[in-house]
Image 1: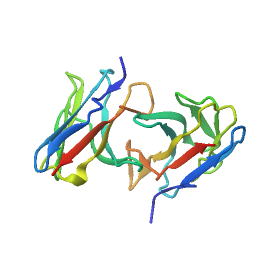
Image 2: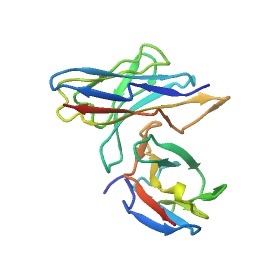
Image 3: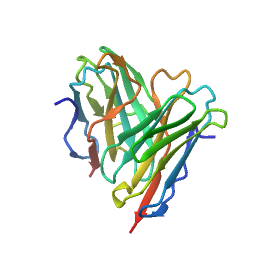
Image 4: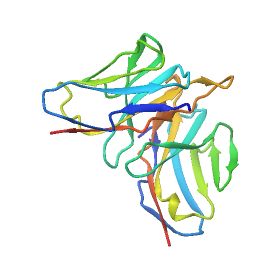
Amino acid sequence: DGGITQSPKYLFRKEGQNVTLSCEQNLNHDAMYWYRQDPGQGLRLIYYSQIVNDFQKGDIAEGYSVSREKKESFPLTVTSAQKNPTAFYLCASQGFRDGRVYNEQFFGPGTRLTVL
Amino acid sequence: QKEVEQNSGPLSVPEGAIASLNCTYSDRGSQSFFWYRQYSGKSPELIMFIYSNGDKEDGRFTAQLNKASQYVSLLIRDSQPSDSATYLCAVIITGGGNKLTFGTGTQLKVEL
């Protein structure tokens, strides 16, 4: 059963703490993305990775960090430098499957982060 | 000017009617366009993609693309209460690789 998983579903963080959000996919997709969504707003790109061991900043990368050591995994760390981290975080993947390159992105279920 | 613009709504339509959702984009060179549906508290789900001018139909959904006027629309026929959601338009902007740029979404309410 192929798909994208994110964990945890809900996460609570105290101010000053770093937290890491997990994103795993078994779709054999090359590209992976992290978005942030605030209430009533669209998706804003945090970081993306087109290939293993390479990633680029998106529009709102400050206060976040990522790694891409394996094709299947793209964890996001929300650092204490991110001043307003409470949001819904979405991971997506995109790429080659069934013999074709696809431009569509497919999303995981999301992680809702709340700062206490 | 925002790269991808949508009316935030809410757009209210009666059950059984046609819902028309519109999206305009600023990059004339854009080639790939997507519609996602997002239920409250859930992640976006891909409904349609369209690459060529004209209409593309899939069940009750029709995507319409007009590159000359730089708009893409989504029609939902025979609207059902289960169609009530926020619909996000996304575009691949020229020079952005394969990144999608999203609009802020239109909230659709289908009323009984």
